[in-house]
Amino acid sequence: MVFYLYSDSQELIHKTIFSQAMNDSMKFDIWLPRYWNENGHYPTIYLNSYGALAGVNDMLVAAHINNFINGFPPSVVVAIRSSKLRQMSQMDYSYQTGQVGKTGLQFVEFLKNELIPKIELAYKTTRFRAFIGHSYSASYANYLFLKQPGLFNAYILLTPEKIREDQPPFYIDDTLKNYYNNHPTMYYIAPAGKDEKRRQDYAKEIASKVKISDSNNFHFEYHLFTDADHNNILDYGLLPGLKFIFSLAPYSAPNKEMNMEKWIDIMITNRKNIYGLESDINSDMQAPLLNFINNKKDEKSLDFLAKYFSDTLNDDIAYMLFNTASSYVEFENYSKAVDYFKKSILEAKKHHNPDILDNGYFILAYNIYWKHDKNIKAAWETLLQAFDDTKHYAYKYLLGQISAEEKFKPEEGIKFLQEFIKFRTNTPPDFNYSISDAYLQIAKCYYNKKDKLDLKLYLDKALKENPNNKEALKWKQDIKL
Image (cartoon, rainbow, N blue to C red; front, side, top):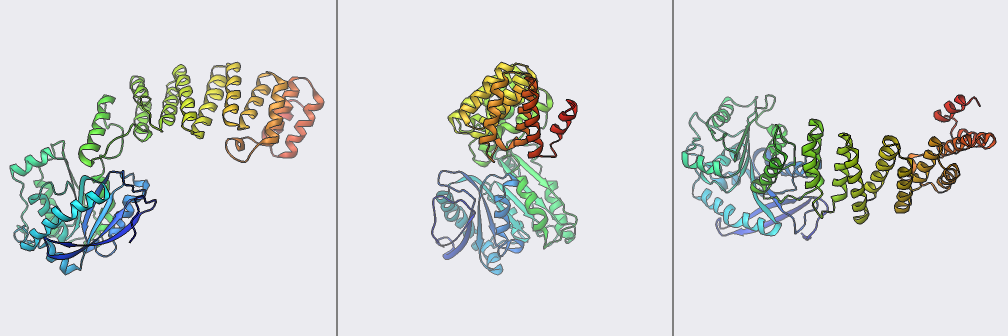
C-alpha cells in the first residue's frame, strides 16, 4: 500500500513484519486518523483481534475515534491479526496462574521491543498507549496491568473471563500501588448484566481491590451494562470506555469553584502528562471556560481569560478576541467589549477571517454603538469602514436603516439603499436583508423628508417585491396611507 505523509481521510494500512522475538511473521492493521500528518502527536490504541474485537470490529474503534462528535484527540489504532486459536496461543495467558508462558513472554517482547517502537517512530505517536481486550484478551490485559506496568497506561476491559473463584488471581501489592500512584493510568472495566455470574463477580472483585482511587494519577471506572451479554458487550461498552480513557483530554470547565489560572494549568498538565499532547492557546480551550464564567457571572476571571487568550500569535486569535468581547457584552461591560471587538476586527483583517470581521463590525456598529450607546455617528462611521474592508452591501443596507429610523442624512441613506438593491448578492451577510425591506427603508427616508409621492412609490415597490412583507403592511397602516 502506498503511504502518504498527509492523509485527509481515515486510512487503513495492512502491515506484516518478521518478529525476532516470536520467530514468526506478525500481521497487524493500522488505522490512521483523519488529517494525520508527520508533524502531529497521536495517542495509540492497541487490541488483539480476538472475541468481540475479531474480524473488522477494530474498525468500530477507529470509527469512534475518528468521529469528531465524540471530541477524542486524533489517535492511531493498531489491531494485531491472527486466528482465534493463534491469538490465544500468542498471548499464552493462563487463567489458573494469571501469568503467561514462554510464548507469552516472547509476545510481550514483540510488543515492547518491536511493534510499539516501530509504530511510535513511523506514525508520531505519543507515550499514551491504550489496550482494549474482550473476554480472554481482557483477562490478558490484567496480566499486562499487574505484571507489565508502563507498557500501556490505559485499559478497557470488556467482560474479562474468570474460570474459578480464585482463577485468575488479581492482587495489587504495595510496589504496584506505588507505581500507579505515580504514573498516570486509566482503567475501565465493563461487565455485562446478562453474562455468567463468574465474570460479573470477577469485575466486582477488581473494583473492590483497586484501592488506588485516592491517587491523582490513577483513574478507575466500573460500569455494569445490565442489558448486555458476553457477546454484544462491545456495542454497549466500547464508546463509554473510550470516553473514559480520554476523559481528561478535552478542554473543559472546572467541576467546582477553582482559580481559573490553576484550572488551566491542570488541564494543560493532564494533556501533557497523560496523553503526551501539547496544548495551544486556542478557542477550543477558551470556549468552555468562557461559558463557565459567564454562567457564574465572574468578571474577575473574565479579565484573566481576556488577557490569557489575547497574548498569542495563534491564527485563532481573532476568534478568541471576538469571544472575549462577546462575554463582556454578557457582563454589560460595553467599554471593554468595544475594545476587544476592535482588536478582533484588526486581527481578522490580518488573518483573513471574514466571518469574525463581519460579526465584529455588526455587533460593534449595530448592537453597541447604535442600539445601546445611541451613538449614531460612531455607528455610521463603523459601518462605512466595514463596507470599505469587506465590500459587503449589507452594510449599505444598515446605513440606510439608520438613516430611516434616526432621520439621519436621508439623502445618503437613500443612495446607500439603492446601491444595496443594485449590487446585493445572495451570500452572507447580504442575503440577511431583502430587496423588499430595502424599498421600505427608502420609503421611510422619503417619509422623513415629507415627500409623499416618492414615499408611496417605494412603499408600493416594497409590497410588489413581497406582498407579505409584514413590516411594510403594518407601517402602511400606521401612516394611514
